[in-house]
Length: 101
Image 1 (spheres, rainbow, N blue to C red):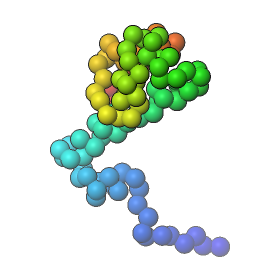
Image 2 (image 1 turned 90 degrees about the horizontal axis):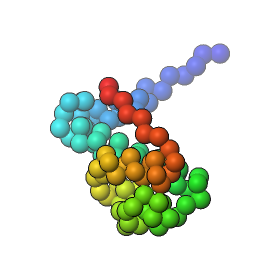
Image 3 (image 1 turned 60 degrees about the vertical axis):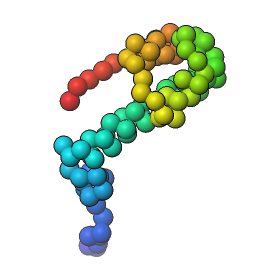
Image 4 (image 1 turned 90 degrees about the vertical axis):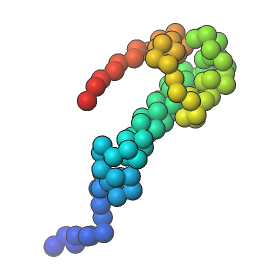
């Protein structure tokens, strides 16, 4: 039995290229940065929920405010590295690992 090939399908990378331009284009780079910030907010929210902490409890543990935690989780603010490290280490008991591509 032959498989049908759907020529209307595109990879996610192709979709991004069409929507925002190729990597290196200003619009695409902006999207990439915002997406990374979004993923970070989701990761923090998931880890907080896994540890059964409210935003307020997490804020108290790492010396910040509930509204700041909320803004991070909802991708509405930039976050300082020192604050991120405090949230992860002091608030969530985790370890931050960074990599460069």
